[in-house]
Amino acid sequence: MSFRFLHTTKLLKHENPLGLPKQSKNLPIKQRIANVNNIILVSSAKGGVGKSTVSINTALALNHLGKRSGILDADIFGPSIPKLMNLKGESRLSNTGKLLPMSNYGIQSMSMGYLVGDSQPIVWRGLMVMKALQQLLFDVEWAPLDYLVIDMPPGTGDTQLSIGQLLKIDGAIIVSTPQDIAMIDAVKGIVMFNKVNIPIIGLVENMSYFKCPNCNHESHIFKPGNLRMEKYGLETVASIPLNEEICLQSDKGKPVLVSKPDSEISKPYLEIARSIINFKK
Ligand code: ADP
Image (cartoon, rainbow, N blue to C red; front, side):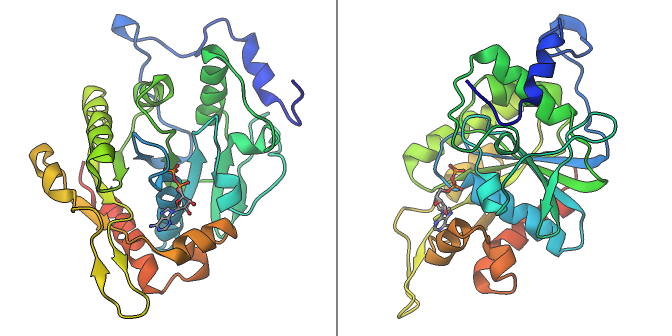
């Protein structure tokens, strides 16, 4: 398999797979990321519910509200952030041998897509994935950040659990669509976060309703899911409609917070950013 850029080979030199100090019960000690004040996870237990779209627009919304923000794409197998950031090419190395984030639209970003060609399928087994993840988490030289938003891979597997165990997380946003089938998986994500002591800021209900562009009628295609979250003590921090512009602008690499920051459609993402800023741990 040929890679355009394979910093990950360096990680093979480590004897300890994750190369991290151990605490009791063989669990790694939770660490901070250098230069990052707050680490926020954006997670969905299911794929395709709009998690990356929420992640990027939230990072941009934090920047819009005056916070220094960055985004880390932790989806090793299906990185979406390079396309959403309209960035191509390879991440460079700093003088100290760390990966330098790539920037656009006023925010910094790092993704597996900057290390491996974007047309390359990644066919790694667990250990390689863990090493790549470790590099994305700890070998990036971020310029000082108030908030780093981590776009989590979907599911509740090894990668998600490792991030929860390796990093000291300040809060998590759970993204779901309102159907039962997505909410059931969202609950699994919540249970996992509770197990690894990650504070949950709240739920984002994506594709929550459809507003007709002709008559402005709001159609709640799926029944609202927020009521079902009450038993977990979770607040719905924003409801985002199913909206053509969100998809079109993302496909062009210009998320709505870049192309239409002051429009109605950007408001829910700004609400998410405000709930992150106001979150008391
Ligand atoms: P995930 O990260 O959960 O796999 P994505 O963020 O990649 O999901 O979104 C999947 C698709 O849905 C993308 O084409 C995206 O543009 C689109 N999408 C996300 N949120 C919305 C929305 N509220 N309205 C319309 N399209 C959306």
